Amino acid sequence: MNIGICLNRNDFMYDIHSLVKSFFPDDEVSIYTEEDEKRCAEHRDLLFEIEIPEYTDRKTAKNSLKKELYNLLSDYTGRKLPWGMLSGIRPVKIPMKLLGEGAGDREILSYLQEDYFVSPRRAELALQVAVNERDVLAGVPLDEKSWSLYIHVPFCPSICLYCTFSSSPIGVWASRADEYVDAVIREMEERKELMLAEGRSAAPVTVYIGGGTPTTLTEDQLDRLLSAAESIWDLSHCLEYTVEAGRPDSLSPGKLAVLKKHGVTRISVNPQTMNDDTLALIGRGHTAADVSRAYAMAREAGFDNINMDMILGLPGEEESHVRNTLRILKDMKPDSLTVHSLAVKRASRLRRTIREDREADRNADYGNYGGLVFENSESLMDLAAEAASEMQMRPYYLYRQKNMRGNLENTGFSVKGRECLYNILIMEELQSIFAFGAGASTKYVYADGRIERTVSPKDVKTYLERRK
Image 1 (cartoon, rainbow, N blue to C red):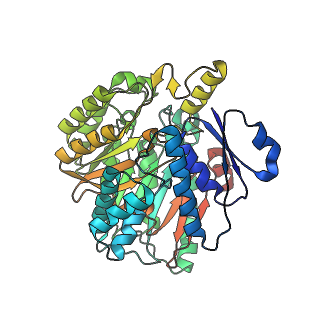
Image 2 (cartoon, one colour):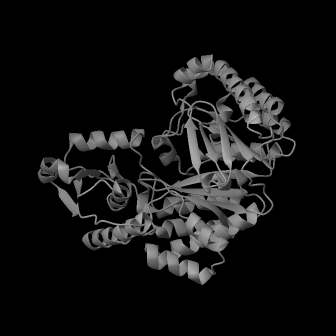
């Protein structure tokens, strides 16, 4: 369905578009102004005309407009969204701010439910995460000069159907992977001089090497990259050192030995699901048994902080599939579990395939893929939360994305003391992140609340050419 929104002025266009998409995630939503009267009039499927009045306080006006629009859309669809009219990435910032101002739990829950229409269960989750974040952050340096290090490795064994990360199949770039490692090392060396000139130390609070899948690099390439990081930066006071090893088909005893040698304290071994049919459908290229073997290998190598990711809402998965994955993961006993709600993003192969199916058959359901439905719900997310609780885990960070199935969230659960500090720092924007590699985004966080970003080219070829 094509949905049009006709505004009398350009204000709040992003917020309005995001809220409408929350109710209609699988439909095309376009915004017009009265100046584009012809396109407004010609919109065929569904048109909302919204009058934005004159205002003096932008924030108050925006929230008032979003409340009216939410109620209009809720009445029209007969639905209430789990996160109400909140459409941003970081809903936990609201209870975090209120906690800092001395508000009590009941006051915070009431504010989320009455002012933003957040469901009672989601409001409680946001508050739990905020309280646990404050606990984890106690004693962590958060002054303007403190920072964390991120290194991006944009290669994977294969690209998953739903993926929109800056990543390419390693088979395409294997012959230039050494060149890529060289380029990242040069970038770190050059940036270090600028950072020292700015008065920053060479000592990051945390280190996170992500992707892609960093462990698609060879043992020698991994060793060279981590050795350079140790040489360039002072990691002696680093509170946490994470390397994503998410694809079990990228791991080997030799690579795990390299990570252990360089003092990596936390890794991820991510199944996404423990159902083989789904793994094949989404292009993971491995089986559930491969996940179990990789996890056991990591434990044997001495890693005592292992995260596992799972995704709810994968094509064709129902409650029985989710229960099966959770049952197996509970037996494996990871130290943390990150539960994602599938987001069908515009740039993913999944979204393109859906669009092609729809164009071939105008009667096709935009939310189906090969007849398989993407389903997620509060009850499934709560089922995962219950399983995490049974594993003695608590929710410690949370974020949201556009086009998430069920309008839900991604939540990290962890055994106390095994939380990922970097995840909290980047999500709550509490500290500058200096990022290196193709597609990496450096984020400057200033004491006055300003946030500035610089992004490296996503295309590996372009990045390599610029780093020569």
